[in-house]
Length: 165
Length: 184
Image 1 (cartoon, helix red, strand yellow):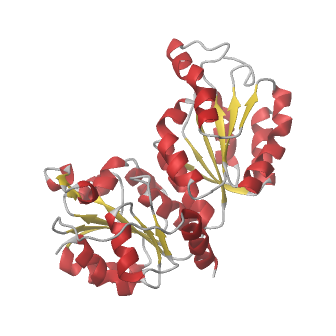
Image 2 (cartoon, rainbow over the protein chains, first blue to last red; image 1 turned 90 degrees about the horizontal axis):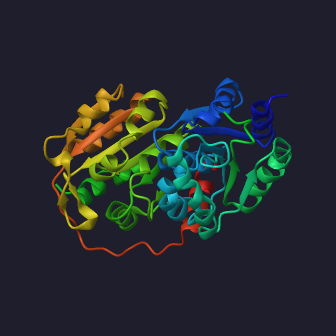
Image 3 (cartoon, rainbow over the protein chains, first blue to last red; image 1 turned 120 degrees about the vertical axis):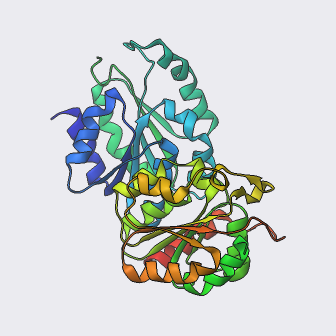
């Protein structure tokens, strides 16, 4: 089974029906898989804070949401994470491509990579790092944990996890 | 007419609907005029009222009215293409356009100068965009509700604020009360 299919199978198995995405090269396959699934309403957003607003609305409407985005988005969304998702206590699984790690070809991506875990830690956001493909075996448990505790939870997926470029 | 007078005029129409209300004075005014469990007050996160409203409308069948402002829409201008391309006929975006950042001291916005938000919404692909004067807002809002079509309303009104207290309700209480109303 492809890793993209396994990830989206876990989303569907956890009743996630509303997924917003902002693209990243590493996430192209999983975004295609989200788009292909009839169980999921896929709504691309123009910016990640907008996407978190969509997810907050969907959650209050009774649908489990998720956001798929790049780690640069942590810089974009700190205010939204704190004043919307955390302040109102909403669950939000964030599947994040961790650019700027080993095998990264673009130097600028490293500038955000060195801050990513520190920012997530400062925000008290539970954070999991998928480096090898078997790490994704925990995704199902991470999703259950997210909807148990009503928090944003970060799943960082690096280039080694995705098989490099 | 200023925004609080527009809200007072449309409060009887809002009362029976799910309402997502913009940060700052709009939420404080609606909270004072007619607090309802069907109102979701934004206490922070400027710009996302329209996104929250669209997500809510797409997730369930009841009608949703987002009360937004010109400054907040300008902050999150990417919302308009998303709305246009994800049609939810149970969604109304009501932009109360007073041409100023009311909650921060009435600094002028570009919507009060050369930029037309109704033209922007149309250019983004929104199919039903109505621009109206403040006093016509109740009739335009009711017509949008009756039409069962997704509608963007740009209500042109004067800038100006009334003095009123901040909302001290706990955000989790606001959210829980609102979700109970959504499900009822």
